[in-house]
Length: 245
Image 1 (cartoon, one colour):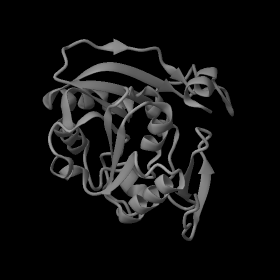
Image 2 (cartoon, helix red, strand yellow):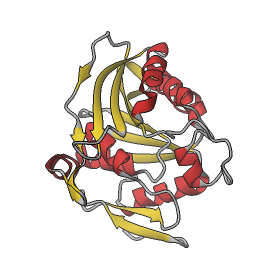
Image 3 (tube, one colour):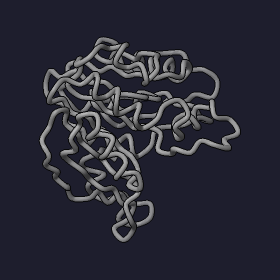
């Protein structure tokens, strides 16, 4: 399948099922956090999945490759970014399984309807202080800072669209963990699994992966941490085996 590439765009190989993805050479590209989230999330046969704030569309594309989910929806507010994600879906011939929707996370419940998904994923903006940004509307700023949506917006809308017993998967920063768990609980999402991510074995965690269940009971499983590099420039075996690097 061939698709139109626009100025300053490139095609990258995902090394999964022969899939490729379109990214901007001067824009915000997907990172390790999205790849880790796609490996942490559990999608069962026949389930419907929604990715909130999909960006390039990396998470639904990887989940389609790794799981037996039935249908994947992806919501993105930035028109140009949503268009790019849509062309990546077309590039891989996945139009019947992955649907890119242009829209606002804050309106996800209205767009998709209540209790309409088995699984919701999100790699939301990590930084809650957007003051002083020179160009707050640029894709990099929108992806990294809570410019167009907050943590609470993401969690609230995830809870709305999830079925009872549905699962929410998110990657975020450990320094906001207390806030995250509190927000999840406030919207009926009980944290069930947690996994810290360390760049090296002797470094503190710089990411956290979470699973929360809508209407779940109070029981948390702390899983063994992910160590990304065993030495500078060399991925650890788990990253190579589980996450495809």
